[in-house]
Image (cartoon, rainbow, N blue to C red; front, side, top):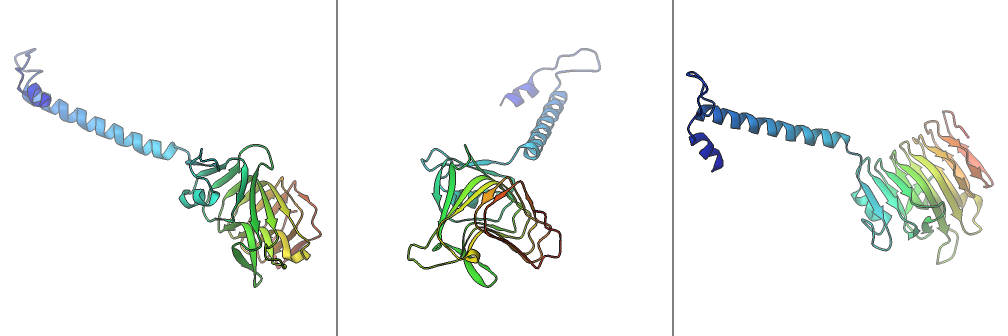
Length: 242
């Protein structure tokens, strides 16, 4: 081995007391160099881990991204990650439990989550509501997404809510809600905020019933366009900013 050859090389004396190339000096030098390299590598790993931003997971229906559905992206996303959704209509209902960012790529209206009244449900005031987006105790950020709700394929009136927020402090920006059908006003909800949520909704638009239920933590609505019949606020013990 090269290190053994270095140790065995004859020393180069520069005085009667010091031999620069002595086996002991060479071995000590190699050990010191190895230690310094190990420490430097460890520091680089630790520093890199603390400075690197979250991973970006790309959702593209044509297969050019990381995955093809938003549900798949959320299954692998960790807190701090960004889910970047390419343009398209995604026929799914999504559940967000982590502190991630979901961002629609491109112009407003080009990324659409479409759900039906026959899809997954979440209880609200004792009644199951089908949803497009469910934020469950999440501090996620949802940006530039259109949510479209469809009637039941089997007919009949079923309760729907485009967005349901159950706890956490999510921030929702540039959300556009479109709900089809002639639902009774309380069966056709755009945004339902359950108790415990400190949500911020800004620069968004919706045309469905808006329900705020329970003791949420000062939800804020800023710069939105609302064309619904009514906004219902029930049981709040703290300030609501609209």
